[in-house]
Image (cartoon, rainbow, N blue to C red):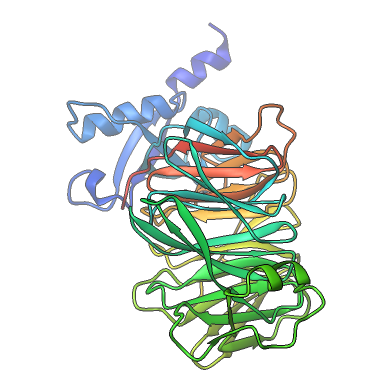
Length: 437
């Protein structure tokens, strides 16, 4: 045994163990002080926590020091960061999650730009660059192809749904938003209405909690707010003057399609608006978040049409999501960063946290529906990363394509699964379970 190995086996350091997970707290104290050998690794520390908890059935834990998961021995960590063993090391332990396991994949005929998961209905929807929307059963069968858009479909969201029928909205490069009705018993689809008024590609759609309103984000720099109803004065027949892009094709063939006007234009972004997300906090039906090419994240009240707050960063915002569990906004960017914002903190309106690991643009982000700490991100670097935001290093990294060279463009975390798609054209489904808090 070398002197170095002997030193690691005999040297000890004091650690203070803490957790935010009440279920796994050791005793009544907020922290537990221990003297442990510095050669210990994650597995050894996990054994200690299980012993202190008197767990008959061992459960795995991860350990966070100074905002990063411990992936070495304590001695290696101390040496790397020039920390003396005379210091007390603060260590937070969290329940470890298993790596996501792919359960199925579904072949689309072109790139997948957006995905609507099955939480509201039993179907999964994909928006594709070939101009089509595809509906999938959870067994992997394509149950419908919705053809109406003239160019790539870039955004998609469910308006309503159950096992028998559902309503879906889709937006695309043809500057239109269509609302579709699907009858699962009859296997039929129809266009319920078409939203008119955008002058640029519609790259973002979001529906509020009560399903009464939805928002569309466009490259024309405007966010439009629409009602989901077909029984109000925003719906009319096709007597309006037709724009150049709203071409002859569908007007003559589908004269029964109703047209719909927006109820509000939200104008503050300078340049394309790439993404929108309604607040997922119960009761906040009028709060909307948007991100754009002007490097800003904006908070809106859709009832008044006011831009309540604006938050800025260094690069273009490509994607946005909101967590109902933590109330944080998550954004993906062209500098390869993932940023977290707290909409409740109006003192500085600055980024709360940056997550750095992707090697290329991040056009897809999705928060865990059950955990305040977990989120997933997809990148042009062909990877999906799962994060626990108590650490700035990713918890898991998945290859999103067989050759590892295809861009990830869409990502949705719903119903215990991670749904992803992009340049490869495959809708991939991963089992994704995390501890709820």
